[in-house]
Image 1 (cartoon, rainbow, N blue to C red):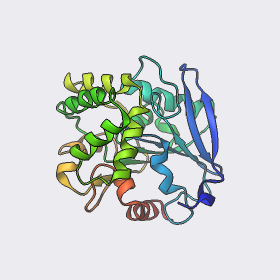
Image 2 (cartoon, rainbow, N blue to C red; image 1 turned 90 degrees about the vertical axis):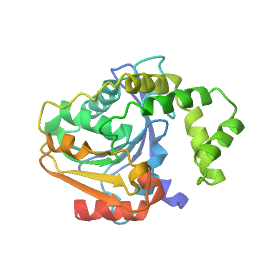
Image 3 (tube, one colour; image 1 turned 45 degrees about the vertical axis):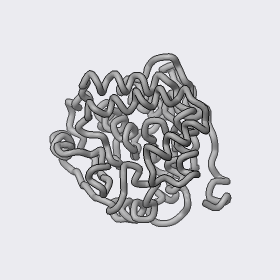
Image 4 (cartoon, rainbow, N blue to C red; image 1 turned 180 degrees about the vertical axis):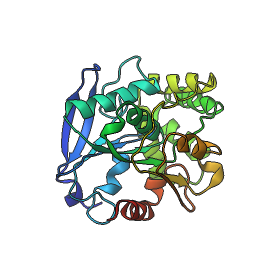
Length: 272
């Protein structure tokens, strides 16, 4: 991405009454803000493909790319990594900034966070994009987080090597990027996620209807898709205006793998 596309980003250290400070990278604009929430052991840079001008970039609108607590340059407390903690940060961010309406764009953990935050403030949600939300949750995924927690204790070189073995299709630079993001994630993030998944702890089902239009973008490769069988039914129960789209030949990190088709879907859904 050309440097000119990121030159106008402004970095904020947003201290919240929840006790954490969130790293927020903002592209200034006018109109309804768009808040982008990345997946677990990732960071705000996941959404860099949306910054460049053009269709599907929310051009002209404020674009806020947030590091979750425990990730990137945000606070890394020892505890406080329940699903509700992440959602609470988003709700607090929206209210402290005085936003009356927002669009939430979330990937994986960020999609779950968006859903829970929307349930807590449905009147403030103008629209949502949920990228491959892990619904329903899979208890077996807890073992993956246990393995990642053990891996986090190793050297950078060892982590890169393990990623190349685990995901042999990765290029060297992609494995290095994954390793950096993992090592920059608080251990409590991985520990809590693993414990909740192994205990088969379900995501709290929203008890309110979310009337805003919602776009789900799911991975194209079924065996690498987090939005599993039954996920659509879970969402349709609380989201009447739901659209589900698939980008072929993608795994869980859809935007990272196919940014142009992803942006095209956004352009079609939002009308430009």
